Length: 488
Image 1 (cartoon, rainbow, N blue to C red):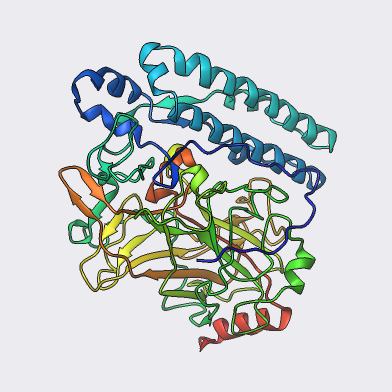
Image 2 (image 1 turned 30 degrees about the vertical axis):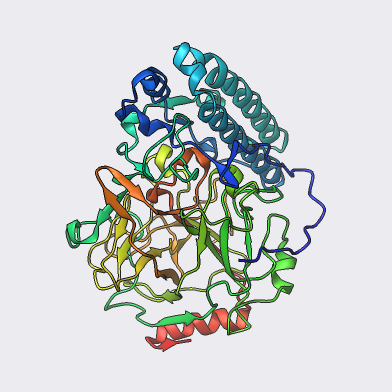
């Protein structure tokens, strides 16, 4: 699969280059050890090393970005850059954790003294700079942000099980093929037949449309990334930061989307959408089949160098649809409105912002958030998401990239004076051979790309959207929805 080779622009002052290096080379690819699961195994003389190394599986840091509210517009670029540096620090600390298991086995304080303690000091320095930047720009920084500097090591018994992806494990945690990675594990999968119908917690991601109100829809066909546009940037959360996502994104729609794209760049770009008035950008982390395939990014940051390995799976279908409100008419989205739904750090942050929905075709009444479904032969894996569709009426973004948007309430209404805009719903369908799960082990699993310390958990799935429809098309979308018609 070809890579996106479009030349990047000169980085802005806030550009951060991720410093996480490749861990080890085996079988021609970069290897990340699925070390935490080895606590359940006994291999004679190696048992002490393996069990002690399993005590801490990943690093759990408070998400400073979610706690920031009052950031003046002229300080947001600097603050986003500092937050991206924090992400790189966690990635590097996790790398250190994953490659020092022998040292950890011989010293019970190794993780705290060598990894977590220095990480806290570095995070404290960044928090101090964030506070200074906010105050200097005329805002009022939260004096309590310092309390978020410390991180914890999360034990193996808090990782949703201890299966391995592969057969036997060697002392370094690699599988028989040298393709071990930190997740997913067997308990991250569930047979779709074992999921109770209509049992998913739907606090987030409620469908805004229904039988009343504005009942129309607008579908835009933007393909399935036939142009092979991939990168590990995140223009919304980490503008001006190279590899700000630490995982690879799949893009449809706008063809000029990277960390350094301006609104003008987006407006002037080509689009993969059939309706050329839709230059919006729609993106999500890629799914991969961990089958040993060496992808174009096997040696790159965001790819194999950060534990995202295997064959990238394109959707067989990407349905992008806008719907109305159960409570009345919708209003137009402002141009360049930015929306993030789901949370790429849900495994450590908790599920407050989680909005992933996994299922199988033919079983759509069975939805799960924290498991990958095992689908029967002939059934496709489905990823669906309903975006926030209540807008504050003023801002195209906010300091934490969330506060300007909200989900509808259970009755379909918007709270706190927010206005209903067309709700974006994305449904991705994949043809994926079901992994084999047997005796607590999983072979050839599929998984969503993630930050390394998030261990490829399904709950970390997320989607991003920037509205770059021209005014005529957006008005057409609104009129169609409000008239109760189905358009495309």
